[in-house]
Image 1 (cartoon, rainbow, N blue to C red):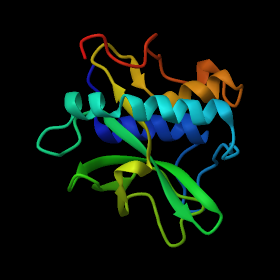
Image 2 (image 1 turned 120 degrees about the vertical axis):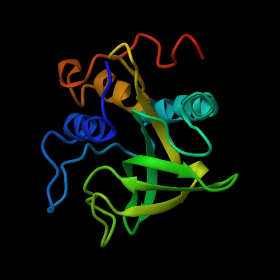
Image 3 (image 1 turned 60 degrees about the horizontal axis):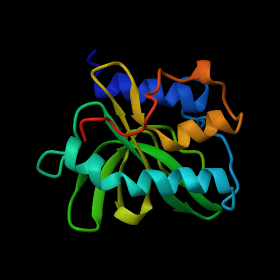
Amino acid sequence: MTVSKSVFAGVIALILLGGPLSAEGDPTYGFSPDDPGMNAAMAGARDTLDAFIANTMVDGQSGAQTMIKVAIPTDDGNEIIWIAPFAQLSATGWVGILANQPQMIAGANAGDTVEFAGEQIADWALFGDDGLLYGGYTLREMVASGAVTEDAMPPMSGDPVPQDW
């Protein structure tokens, strides 16, 4: 199964946000910065980020059917939002396109380019050729916590990391 980046971004946006992109801002799911489940999910994503980068990026550019979730600072904390496509500019510098309509990032819109540091990456996602979603640690936690139902998600792999990595 091959899914274009725009279709993948749209699917993830609909899954996470519960509706189409809009200029007014997309619905989001709030989690406390101290939420142990979500913090563990983001730690798991960061623990496997190097494998994701090594197996999906070519010459510092994002691979097909991939996204990353980034914590963008705002006046009210962080908005954690999907980015696709994206590129690594340096050991710590990244750039990418906002895949969702932000709610808290002043003056920003879906499709805008943003720069961020590697430590701001909170999750990664890969839509595999087998039709399964890999990564998506925060999505898995959203299901586990009851914030969304499993049937609202694309089919997810049993293990977030592909076996051939």
